[in-house]
Image (tube, rainbow, N blue to C red):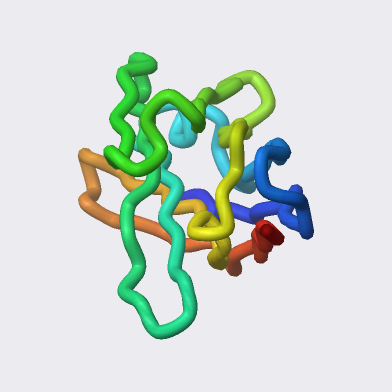
Length: 119
């Protein structure tokens, strides 16, 4: 089991960029096999999937962020990143990292990091 810890959130103007990091404690071999995802939750809204990346590097994005966000991972550092460009006020939310193990079907959430985009 790995435990994700997010960082990199903050306040940015519309059109700006931020890079979120998710460092996962635990075994590197376990991390490298996990599907890593970024979710976000805005006030009064349900948590939604933003992007995910498999152990082999296959990625998936929500339509609302395609072309603006890029998810990547560095298995040597047990870290996954979310590069966010051309940010919009509607991207304002708490962003969560989620680590999921396909063999065990167990997942772990990070504590979240706040991203605020001002207009």
